[in-house]
Length: 79
Image (tube, rainbow, N blue to C red; front, side):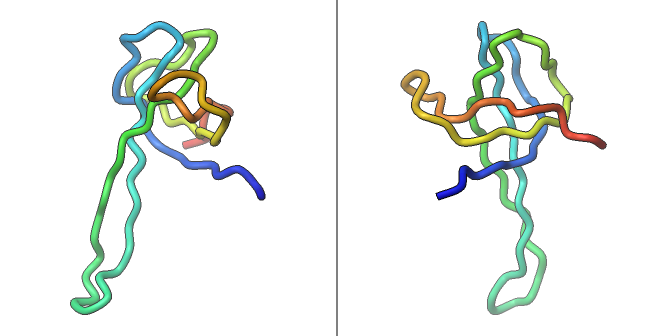
């Protein structure tokens, strides 16, 4: 089964080798047909500490690295 890849924005880089990424998804409400925005935060592994707050990044699923980290940074997303 392929690993999921998500795109989001870095919201925190305070922890060593870890970034927090905010991923937003948009979908139409089934009844009201209005576009709804939902967001979720993921903690991702950043081994070189090269990503800073505001960067657009892509993250990929991986084996658990710690209690909360199940994602790793693939590359910087092109804007």
